[in-house]
Structure formats: C-alpha cells, structure tokens
Image (cartoon, rainbow, N blue to C red; front, side, top):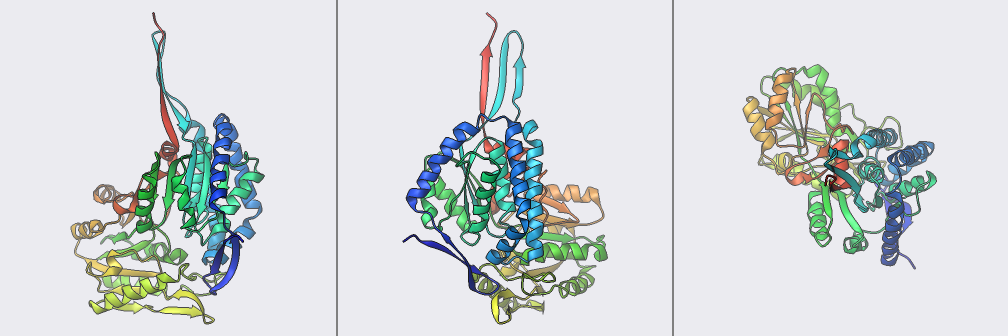
Length: 462
C-alpha cells in the first residue's frame, strides 16, 4: 500500500485532504520524462512558450474558486486573501511572459565581415522548484513560469502542507497543452523527496523556506552539478522617521506586518520609530491592529486566520515569554487562542519596550506579532536595522525621497521600500542577502538564473 500525505486543516486540526505519495521509482521516472519533454520544448519559439503560460493562467482563472478554497483548507489563509493570491500568481506569470522575448534574446557582440560573436541564453534543462506553503501559488510561479518560458522542464516539489497547489500546476499546464512531463508535481514527504538531490537530471534548484531548511538544501544540492537559488527567512525592519505621516502610513504598515497572519517572508517583523513620534505611533498602530478579526478563514470578514504549522504557536509563546522576562510590555494580545475551541491560532500581538536582547526583535517570528522600539534618529535606526543575520527587505517611512534613496544604499537587504512593505513586484528582482538567501527570481534578471550562457565566436575573414 502506498504512503499518503495527510493534510491537516490548521483552522480545525482535522484532516482536510489525503494525497497519494510518489515512490522513489516514480520520482526517478518523472525526472526522465522531464528530460524528454525538455529536449523537445527547448526548440519551441519563445512566442509558443509565452502562449503556453498564458493558457496556463487562463486554466487557473477558470478554477479560481476551487483553488482558493483548497488553499484555505490546506494552510489556513483567509479565503479572500487566497482569492487575491490567484490574481498575484497571474500577475507574476503574465509579466514574465510579457518580457520573455526581449529578456531571452541573443546578446550580439559582433556581426561583420571579419567575425561573428554573440552570447545566447540557453535553457538549463530540468529545474527543481521546492516551493513553500505560505504563498503556495505565488512562490511556485516565480520559478515555474520563467523556467518554462526559458525552455526548461520543471519538477515542482511543493510543501507537504499544500500538495494540491503543486498538483494544480501540473494539471493546468497539461490542460494548456504542455508536453507530457514538462511540469510535474512531486508529491512526497520531505524525507522521501530527498532522492531528488541524487538525480543527475537536475540542473538547477530553487528553494523557498526556512533558513535551517535552506542550509540543508544547499548542502544536499552540492552533490549535483547544479546552481542553487535560496529564498529564505527574514526579520524585516521598518523605520518610521520623524517626518512620517502617521495617519496615512499606519494602515499600510500594520497590514504589512499582519497580512497572511504574519506568515510572509517579507512581512514587517520589527519597527523602529523616531522617539518624537513613538507614543503617537504606538497608540495609532495598536488601535489599527485591534480591528483585525481572528476567525474562521472561510468567513469573509476574517483577517487573522490560524497559523499553518502548530509548532509556530509555541515559537510565538516563547518569544512573548522571553520579551516580558527581559522587561518588554505586551500591550495587545500575547496568547495562543482558538476559534470554536479549535485551530492553531495566536492573538495579534503588539510588544513595546523592546531591545535586541529579545528574540522577538532578532529571531524570525512568522506570525501575528510585532516588536516596536524607539530610536533617537537615522544612525541608530540604521545600526539596528542592519543588526541582523537576515536581509530580505526593509522599509523606510518618510516624506523625503532623497533621504530614502541614500539611506536605502546603506541598508543590508535585497529590497528597500519607501512607504510600502510586504509587496513583491515582478518587474523587480526578488533576492535576499546574508541568511535570507542567494540568487533571484522575477524581473529580466531572474531569467539569467533559468538559463546557461553559450558563447559563439566565429572568424569569418580569411
């Protein structure tokens, strides 16, 4: 009898789905089919690849209600947020499709009577995409769409918490007319999927997940002659400068910290506020967070759903206990909770009087909790923002554009925001520094990670 992946609904702690797991033999066979599919697909014109991705998105939209509901029942995202993620997935894929032809064209160096020189961007072959559960469509599509557009095949190993999302990718690419094996969902536990790192067919690995898991993936992939891209955790800081417009930024900044129940790699996880605004900011921020309803994620007015992983409730409890033991004040929330006596819920939590001796200001929370700290000015804010092993995004809340540009140059991070946060634009490269990862997806630069440069150097004159 085959093993099954058992998916527990984090809102009820009841089983929502059971998915048949692949055997090692089936995984190896999938890799061979991917090689065969890619050998044909690499010759397809870019225009044909673009049309396939467009049809894939059309298939996704035709089933958007089912996909949104499945997402919510798998990982607990409020249904209205899951529905928005379908749109976000489409936006990323269609943008990459719109720039594919220009981004993948040959780079001409010389073409005259004496010689011909160019750099072609060739597909790598078979790409392994290991996608996370927190944004199961958008994270996956950030690698899958550009990989397919560049002429590659993809093995998509989705999180065991959200296997139906990976299956949907395979289903919709097949319905869109993709060659058999071009995009394949690998349904396997983390242990069983370890065989993927023994497959010589894999030419590139993209992983999104925790820092700890990222280090493991990097080590395991070292046995392959393959590039590795890692998008890992964050402890993303926000600096509210003395000239910030508190009234206008509070709804945006609070949403950036608590959207998706705080389970975003680029969620704001620590806030530094100029001392002249500190008391006003804390009062207004807390008032905003109090409006966030904790509830059943299937209900339209729920903003805070359950934590996807039960163990994260314990992580947040330890961060609160650590902070209060070291002198912090919990002014909102701070406790595990439930809805109708069930689920992995945690109250939206605001903590003040924090410092960098506390876990809530230094270790990733990945939940609905935020620490707020006053600073004397720009230099102290910069020092504290950079005092982290993470470097995914950072945000500056100010009315001074020139300052934000200059300050942004000094922040050790992959993305700098001004007056926004927790927002991924497919036009820009998505990347991190330090323990937040390496490599990038999205943007025209993202295509470079999906291709292998090939040089042509011809002498034409006698």
